[in-house]
Length: 73
Image (cartoon, rainbow, N blue to C red; front, side, top):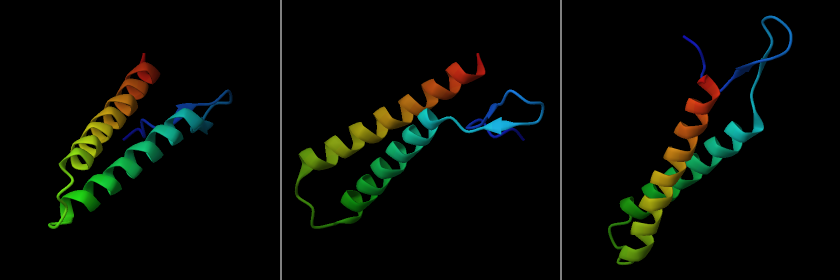
């Protein structure tokens, strides 16, 4: 199975992980952590923070997916 986060380097068999994908992965992870924290906090009454965390998670997911699709083209 191919790791879609890696791209082929200049030498045969060389694989390079682009920094853009690293940044997008980190953004997605941080958004997921924040969302899980807010959703897990039963006493959280700040619905705008929860909504913002959901939006950021969706945007981060889409940005990473778009980058991976562009990488495959």
